[in-house]
Length: 474
Ligand code: 5AD
Ligand code: SF4
Image: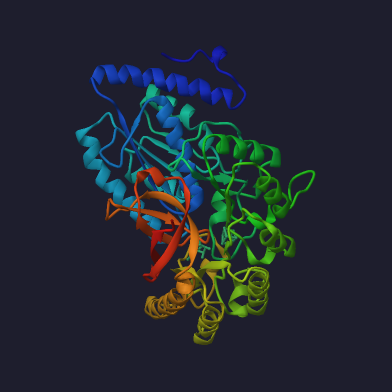
């Protein structure tokens, strides 16, 4: 069963296709021994990037022959982890603890860990010490090698740890599979160069690397021929796309090239950094028929002083000016954001500035976070860390302000007819379907599964806070 080294392709992705086949043969034998199918369960924490990485891993597992399940009793369990905030790490340790008993019941089962948390040395030390029953650990830079690592685990039956400190090559053309057939994410770049002082991402995801536009367009065309109508272009800071490419290309230029692809109906992107949001991008969005009128533009704080300490490279006024420009160009645009409360040294006055921006901008929605100290980041060593009590008080006040404004804003389309991309049967009522407006707002309306994947005109009859109840417009 072992692969003879002279048979193993050296170049990628051929090498991984070779290992996928090896794994498949191995699993076939296991299935015969057990007289049943083998299952896999993938559990993802964190951002869109991680969810998209999980899609890639799921596609490989499927090719190998695993049957996907939602259960942690599966024969192969993977946690794709996030380490942006401490509580995400705690949750992973908690769930790993529970898996120990399951592993005792099914000793053949495989437990794997990947994602940002694995790029931290102290995490790997802790897993080695206290979670010896974890079978396979890999990081953010070598996901493409998953089949090879899994095969190594299959045949060696020891704990496999493979973490790369630096990113290697960008490997194209691996298998992919999608949660929804009609919409998906597409990585346009990896890593981040911004080093916001609170953030661990640049340390665990490495420096910024853009994919070549030709590769992105080829992938987008393939997705469209597979039935995809909506594509979300993914990167930690899409506005700086292309800066490290030769010849250079801007994000707006890339968008125009994606827009030209026949069959794409909606283009989204995530995440934008305010410091790099160009007039060219605003113009491109305004002139586009396909780019959704939605921008996720993390504010983080409304205080220019805190923004400076966060190393964000813009001020409160600068941010508000950007919002004005966006709204002047596209009065309907939805603006969503991320906000952190309790950054070290944040005074009551600083916090008031954040509330002021929330009241002025009226975000369509906002993800709000309590500052979480990440070892190794500059902010972790700053004086005046904020107490839990103050943090909680500010967090509650912020959430209330965000919700009030978001509700007012969401309902602005009430009574209008808008196109909705139908995603699934409603979770609570089988006679209804659930979809999304161009600006990402959820709409529920009467319909059946034949509508899934279609864009239909829906009258938005009633606004229920953050979503609409509608009826199909005949
Ligand atoms: N503490 C709290 N929130 C954080 N984020 C990033 N790092 C931290 C941290 N240390 C938030 C930011 C970012 C989002 C993805 O997570 O708001 O935009
Ligand atoms: Fe983190 Fe800032 Fe990069 Fe976003 S832009 S991933 S917050 S360092």
